[in-house]
Length: 404
Image (cartoon, rainbow, N blue to C red; front, side, top):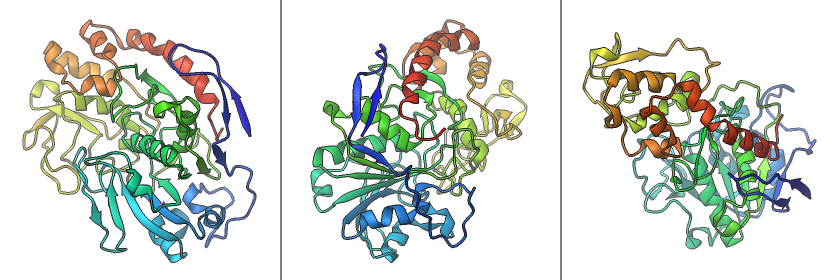
């Protein structure tokens, strides 16, 4: 039983906590029976079947998965297919934003369906309900979460994790988390979400770049009492082998339709704020989250024209309009969160409050960033305004880290 003493701070919920409902396999020394084994190769939790298969035998299983839920050591076989081949009794699949195959638009409602390949029911967690019902969990003994995250607060898969944890806690169902590396896990940055600004693109008082894997975040959600009523979910984290936070990790499958490569994932924390404005960030091109612009030549010499692309962006902002702006495709993969792009576009636009839409404060996690920009604050001054909250968060984060 792991005891963690937390420090009392004003921004978070703290106290003396006992992780009696969380366990990891960090001390499991069993060898993995893999087709090809490299002692230093990064192995996500799903690639460690010798750890989790014995726990799933003779159990009725549901999975929260998408196109990223693959076994990299087994020619990217999907976890659902692998478990079925292993004789595991899979009952259903819970489906997050973008759908089971990852080809639905951002914000597009995902419907309940039947998977044509396996015949399994696909239960939407991004439609009329974002939380599994009591009925949906009634015929299940254990739930598995295996979805690749990118380590950014407004990436909605961690909100799906929250509601799944809550439903499992309420119904007394254990949740197994197949942990995966965080491609933005080497640092922490950005404003911390403030009370009153919670939404599905930000449910927790964490910064934009939170520096946690989903397994580590699940421990934090439990430990800080963020589930409704302060309940705890029983979680079993199948840990990553041969990875630490400073390690770069190239995703084997794009995590969502408009994050097509490693650079877009690194630029995502900086550019996603444009979703709260009329600036295009490249949706409707083959290089989303690697450019930005607006239909006015004053924004830059680089041009692109967003168009409808099935499976990526059906109705992109500024569709069929020539946008002028910046091409960031030569940025290094060491890129970290910056306000520079946002502040430059705001200055060029010269539209004051009209630059922002109602979504901006949800992305920022408060109205403080928008107000600071309107007041003419510099990037340095804005950063200084959230540094105390960031320091508090870093201290709390340290209590939940599984990896160095």
